[in-house]
View 1 (tube, rainbow, N blue to C red):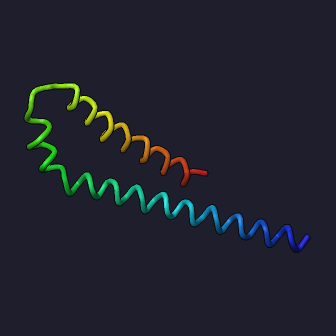
View 2: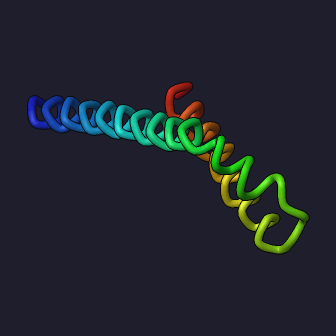
Length: 77
């Protein structure tokens, strides 16, 4: 019984650490987006539409959306 409680406490600590790391990674990614938004507007959005522009937008914004939603899901459990 005591061994099971120790294992449960270790699992809870691991889950908390994982959540904190997920939150930190999300904020670092969003902070990077905030720092580079001026370059993005200048180099990407002022150009005509192309495959590269579409792939950039999908990678940048869909990836961010998934990251935010997954972080929100982690903290809602």
